[in-house]
Image (cartoon, rainbow, N blue to C red; front, side, top):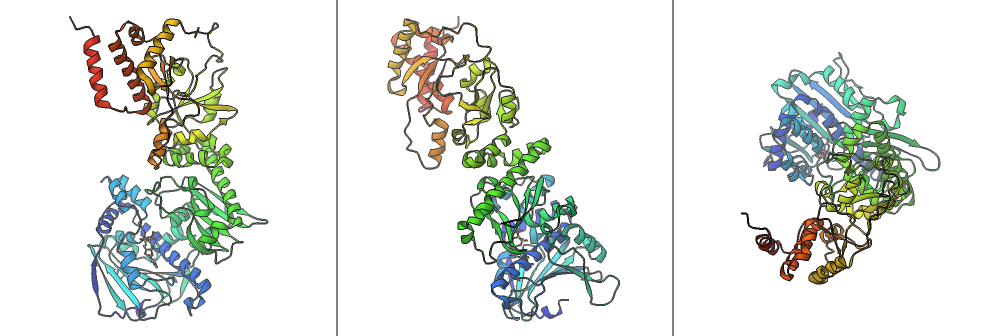
Length: 635
Ligand code: ADP
């Protein structure tokens, strides 16, 4: 089928692959060996994308289609030669395109990706699956790959032949007579010759590429003619009624649009009719892409208008905190020439974004309700991203709050497993707040002195240790009528708990204590606003607390990381635990030692609040001096 494309010019150029391509190729060949047949899905997927791109361009430049206006994909096997050929008549590649697109990995973050590989074939193949192997999968079955192509709109003499044996090099030469589109010839490896079989290929097309919207044609079986027949459904999957699409088809389609080798966790397929008409198919992936946290990573839906592919990564239709959702959107109302700029301003798009956001959240809520185990794994992968929504999107907060999962004092694991509804259901009688504590990690939160009193009373506390938590918690007010309360803030009043002691603890301060607090405050000077007796400590001698409206240490650090290092620092209160031995010792000390121990208590409290103290070297020296003086010498 490629006769007319074979007249090569002698201008052959040999180039080396970018180092990471060679490395990826070798890894892929090994780790995907047991799923070799995916090469066909990947190459058909690329062919379909190439046709989509040309159809899109032809909206404005119909001449690009010339006399070859029926876009399709052709597949042919040659048993004798041991080849499989995949052809499309789409956008094609120029010589430059071939060099740039087939010899490099354009995706940002490739270096990070390689850093994550472990050498363990099983784990690596999962990672490679997420990375999306695309064109390179050809080398899993072929020891030589030939790409013959001509870009739409270029003269027939501007074709290119790209060839490689996956040995670190590729060659490109000009073809002076090439058909529009791309033909890929796979010269199969000895042990992959089984793929040069029409029946085998046909069944693979049906299994993996049935949903491709373009006809995939193969020579008619058993006939020595050049006639071909269409072997797939050739109908865009999302246009079919939900009831007629099988789970396997939904999964195959997911792999086509995402190039993710892993299966999706769940999906939601909806057709909206009425004033606004569109169809959406949203997927929750099972694993986070390697670039989930990269700013410039692509996100968004594949946008179609009346079935014509318009663009990848249309990010206007979902908020940033749902950036892990993949899928397609097909609108009947948007103009075919819609651009990214237009999408940003359009009121219709805004309304669709609102509706799709709800759909996405519903899909997640359904998973949480129906398949808690899957939800747990979803939360592990994407919880941190979804959580941002609780802070960022007040209009959907009610929907997002039930989806959040936390680590808490009531659950021994450091995995987020507790839903707010669980917390509220087991609140103690008389408890008015949902208590939480912020720290640099969940483990640090678990041993925070701020929650000693709550823990001793059996009150559950949510343990927050993510970087975004201080900001998010600052935005939340209540859940099911119970307000959120930072355990380190303000006056922790537990007297309303049903099992509070009959006679409230006498918290009047004696003159001696008053005197003690004053002496301590004098020592600490400007570092604290007040020294007072603590209701929240049971084990630690002291802690620093802040007013409700102080932005707090974690939040301050988050802002500093974002370049706002100038936030004013309010003065904390030093709370002391009068039951603690060190506090009993203090009044008996001479002035020097009193000051030394007071400062030490302050430093400790700062250390537990902030994870660091201003001058660690000085702290250690003073600590040791005091130890030598105050600890009675052994014997
Ligand atoms: P991806 O499709 O994820 O970008 P691939 O490795 O599959 O990665 O392909 C790399 C690039 O090569 C594509 O982005 C596209 O520009 C080009 N390409 C691959 N196959 C074709 C094709 N059949 N027609 C035109 N261009 C293609």
